[in-house]
Image (cartoon, rainbow, N blue to C red; front, side, top):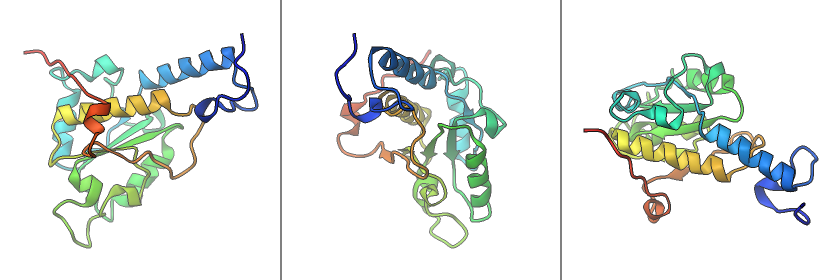
Length: 195
């Protein structure tokens, strides 16, 4: 049973195929697979990296989201978590690693230094990684705790679930800030941690 016409948004066109019952189910399956098997690249630069490592440890258990393996090769990763401040010398390396990642790829800016330069307002540091790579989710804090990183990951999962499955336009990140008013009501996160 086909849906009439174009559904609009994410399901408008799938490589020339009309959006119907079969392509709609295929789209849902692809989104489910992408959301539940993200592989993050290791890109910890400063104190936020300690919190990112704690999130991957057994207490917070990223493996329940299909993300237990941080990849050392960008060609095996589709999520970059930039944890910490980025110097002007590191910015080209950040861009090179991002360019080598597989499509579709996502970026989480973890901490105030990665998001806006933080307290380091000087010529040596990039004042926000959105000048170098497109950012999908900004995680606030100095440093953000593991629960905040989990909240950003779950926000990104929701973005993948409701977004387009085809490659997005280059240089366009979602730019979701977790500290925006009303953001907490839209995507509440209840993370059960073992004692």
